[in-house]
Length: 442
Image 1: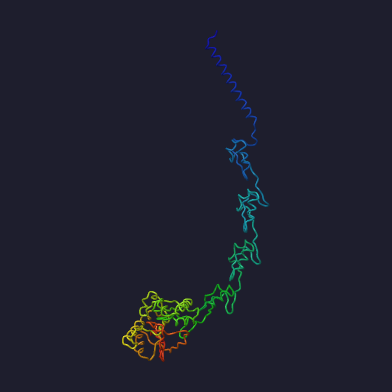
Image 2: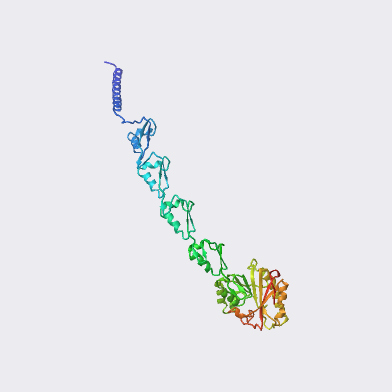
């Protein structure tokens, strides 16, 4: 009997032979199967470059059929070439430049008919030229300058009839000239300066009668002059400062005459608005009328200090008007008393230097005052003016009827709304500085 060790050894060798036989058979069958399988034209060991791909379906097929094929796709051992896509005269290999496009429908057709055609669009191997759009005598290739347009309807027609025409509009190869529009003596090619306008109706007529006339209005080739509105010694072109107004009826008479041209007037009072309304029952409607007429209303203005008033420091006037200046009434004090005479002389002496500071070159100070009556002659009106450097230029008789609606008021004390007697003669004294006075008469 053989020893146990020999038996075990023989058994072990038999098992190893069986394992070896099984492993070898499996390996052989794998090699045979590999040798029988053909990879069509391409295999995963090749480096493949695919050219002219459109939707990349060929790349997808190579990359997914055997998964392993993807690792070398788009390399260069073998080349699979896709034919270029075509549309009419053009193909996707050409570099194409499209010129004069309007709504870009031609570009869209090339880019979308075969999708692959788009990758070289707008390059320069082939050029697709769009013919210029035309409207009457003009086309979209011309650079066009339109002159004298009114409502711009001609420009709109060129810009919208063919949309493509707008790319060169308002340039200078061709010029479309619109004839000037006319109104009476004027036309839209003239540069027109309307002077002395009141309610600007003349300017409105020029600007709106033909709309095109407005583009040169307020220039200087032709001048349309509107006469200023007048009332007695004054006109609407003058910048007028009224001092010491009572119920503002004098200001209202002037503003009524000037109409919409009353905006050069500044009317002032010594009293506050509240005190005015207490003294003069109808004053509120007068102030509202003046406000609507464009008159500037300023209250609490002292005629003896107005040059230092911050509301007037930088302002200058052509006419400064002070009607019947008076220092105020006191109960029980007679107008002929030395104290009253001295107070009124002081008022005038202080007024003139302030007026001088607010006067424009060539301007005048107008004082309406009693003539030839005591105690008013004792106020020394002309002496106060001369002390400030003024000379009497003219003396004009004062007639209230020249200022319809004007009512003279005392303006102070418990009888502030009462009128006062003007006497047989009242006059407007017209003062000017010597360098401004061209003649003098009394």
